Amino acid sequence: MNFRTPVAQDGPAITALIAACPPLDGNSAYCNLLQCTHFADSCIVAERDGQIVGWVSGYRLPADPGRFFIWQVAVAAEARGEKLAQRMIAALLDRPSATGVTYLITTVTPDNAASWALFEGIARRLGAELTKAPLFERDAHFAGAHETEWQATIGPFALPSKTSI
Image (cartoon, rainbow, N blue to C red; front, top):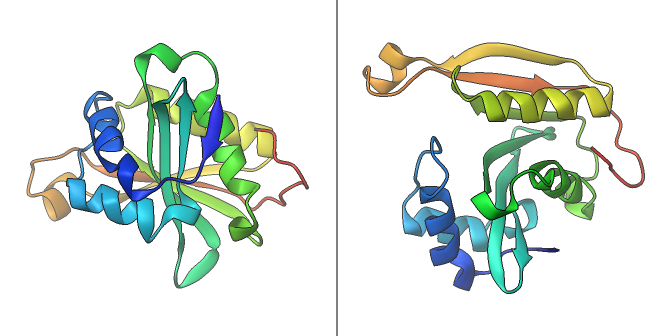
């Protein structure tokens, strides 16, 4: 398995991977291209035999750079069960661009058991608390067309010299 920074040419494969990973919300191809270029330092792909089998997108909050937002985590069916999502997030946190991060945040719908398990496991491994609160509500923010997105916050934590989560 090879972890690397995405490039623009990865956009179509990332778009296809996200589409193959329900319940993830699809982004426009253009959005994925921006993530692969403008936000490449805070995104990662996992590649096996020349195929992208994993993707994590994220960014540091501009107003609070100690907080790293995990936007999407996608793992191809053939790569599941290998703790790939945890390994990709650990690799992101090991990058120089993550220096000073003390919180991970993400949003998850209530029924996404796999994501909740991932982030609860990461919190345990980092020895940090995970708190949950509604962020974007079904009726107020999605006009009833999408489940409420709950913000999960992990932290504070101090990153070791090599992150293993």
